[in-house]
Image 1: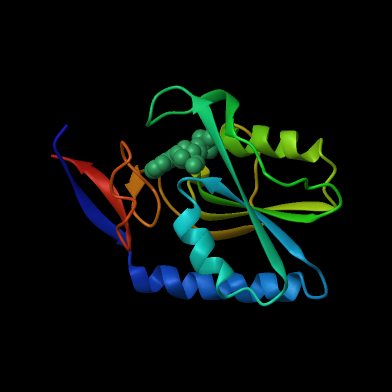
Image 2: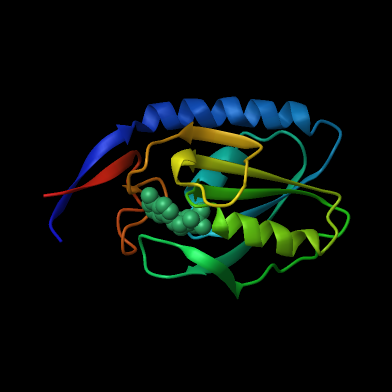
Amino acid sequence: MNYHIEEMISAKEIQERITELANRINVDYVGKELHVISILKGSVFFACELLKQITVPVTMDFMQVSSYGNNMVSNGEITVLKDLDEEISGKDILIIEDIIDTGNTLYHLRKLLLTRNPQSLKIITLLDKTDCRTVEIVPDYCGFQIPDKFVVGFGLDYAQKHRNLPYIGAIIQD
Ligand code: IMP
Ligand code: MG
């Protein structure tokens, strides 16, 4: 497929929004310790930028899951490709995701993590395609609501490419 990438959210807009989100989290978690779970690989860029602005004590773990189906569509249950290194029982957990599309990934992941008895469990996503939701998942913090377009950059990939773009862009078929 021949395609080009059209900028949708600039690097500056992303940074400004991340600062706003970090400020809110710093207020919401004052007096607590935050244990974040960054969902590999897409959320890593977002997680790093966000955590640099968090002022409450924070620890970090990673998890990798895959939803059934091909690259552009997801459905069904998730498979855990890499589980957490640390236990989450009794901890205040914040899942960091790059994008919520159908909601399937987070729906199943949230259900799984709740069985491990965290003290609390919240979700932050950089991007949310609210129009595409097939199951109910509402993030506690969201960077940007975007239309139903396939986007790349700032950690998000198309066939593993373009994660390194400093902005978010839409894939446009030529
Ligand atoms: P969901 O389970 O349908 O919510 O899909 C979430 C996952 O699909 C994300 O964590 C991404 O890995 C991937 N995904 C969904 N939409 C996009 C997109 O526009 N660009 C890149 N990855 C996407
Ligand atoms: Mg993902």
